[in-house]
Length: 178
Image (cartoon, rainbow, N blue to C red; front, side, top):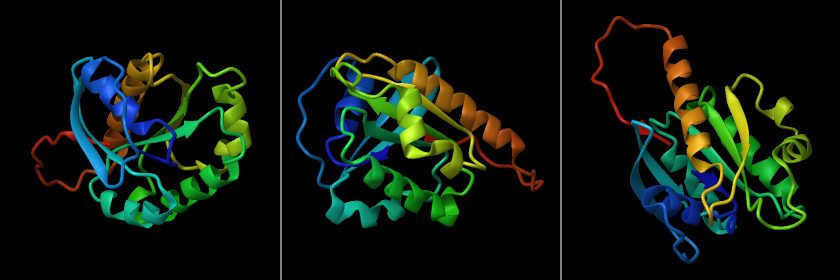
């Protein structure tokens, strides 16, 4: 789970884990939790979004099966920064075909952008070509939209795995890493 600092990633992670709102502090490294939602098991890495540590994001791409990218939908000032970071993520070879769910967080704040407006401002149709993707409005504080977004991500991951060429090798079933 990636996104700029203060987008709500940690609040989201612990809302999914505990179904409760928990106060959080800025993540200086990462948080990792196993989440079970509607019978699907995910290991979610919540990686800090401060500018000085974004260069470390690439270390979390290996074996990534899906990406949750969180955007503060009330922060219009940082839209270009979000777009640039998302483009940088997608340039990485290990992220070329990874399915993506963009979460337009903080829908509870008056004046926040809807998922369709956010999608247009970030030019998602253009920058996410070649990826399976979905945009979901949500609120990490009360949990609105989170379970549905995880269900969509699970479906996109399964669809992506079914379209990869079969190498003829047998693999053990692995947990989904987002």
